Image 1: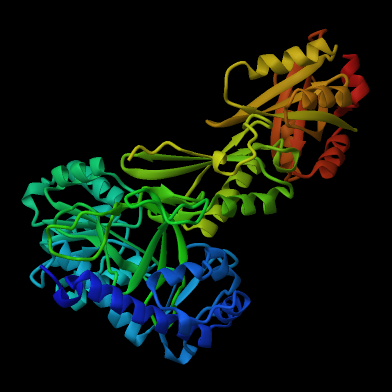
Image 2: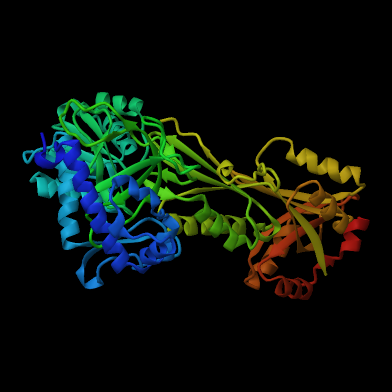
Length: 432
Length: 143
């Protein structure tokens, strides 16, 4: 099943010709409309008119998340705000947040690309699709919502949270397709058991999961426990949101919507292309986005190309499910968390370089973040009431900064090991 | 009128209290009174010692987080109602007790009550007005 067969199954040579043409147009547009890109291209004496092969992209500079932050909020928009019909933002409050915009045409494109992924996963206009991603600045909820409507499925925009209600509605509304994070799907299975509901008695057939790393073992567990076919889909707000890539019914890697995104897989250290099939960092250039094009965006997600053609007939390159990160970002309950955000809050409170450790665990299919904080004199009180109030205040500050709840554990001074590298401050005990 | 107390942060793990007392003993510091406030995750140890500065220094050197606060030591007869009288006086002045602990002196005749109040100055005034004996640090150490 295809949503746009002509594109999804086009020959590789036609695809490459289309990509090149679109790449040239995009580079010219950003050089004209976005000072950030224009200045960078000028510095490197790059002339988009002279680009004559897809490999030519390798001369162009990368775009980093920090560039998006530095140009907060609208600095990288390539159209006037008048032409922007939607704005989304990644997690993190001011200073750490990134903002992306969509023109009317971008929204239509986004809807179609998500519709492709839904269609590839098996969803049809006859399906009832329950979207348990958060609606709001996060792209997950709205992205899947628009795609599902475009496809013609019946959408239940339930948003995240309240698991019992999710299950009740799933049962009553006869949901056939579920959209959420894979860990939340397992959590639902647990709660169904508690509620005495047999998943086999539900109408559920498909699960479209994304927004966090998972594994083949988790897929098996979800499939068995919920009696569905689980597929993976991938996207990130900086590039578009969901709809960048998704699995077809073969459940063996994600097809990248290559007519709209040019991908590279690079060694994160040398920034040279990895050998075919080797793991590297996914770097994406948008080919058709109007309001917020990005050139060589370093996603920091690690994946590899699956070189064999897919039996489904799609010609788009497949990549493996995301295998990790090339930076220290954590994905907790589908929310992106950087240790530096936590460090900044602690620094503000303590007034000195904080010593802390982050412990990430998965208990009953739910992620749990514990921040261990060394108690220094400036945050130590002899009165229990004040000490507890202090712990509550950090907890609240963290929750508002990160967008997820955290546990705070106070530990004695000098008990946390000292590290030079920041990554070592994180202990991720989750077994996916 | 105020007595200095040191407070030490404790994680709830075995042997920490033993370590603290060992450090103090090695340095010839005498503990006059102590109390532990604890929750599921951590505790706060409060100590009245004969050498406050020295105690703070050696504990810090041994990696403990140490704070210093002022408390009030009230001496009462060690008989029924001794504490009740003090608390009544404090209650009448609408002063809150943050925490308290007590010990009995060597002769066994008097009890010493250690208080941390919300309003320390007002508490001293009230206790003096009502005729209670407030001990100085020297007096406590001499007990």
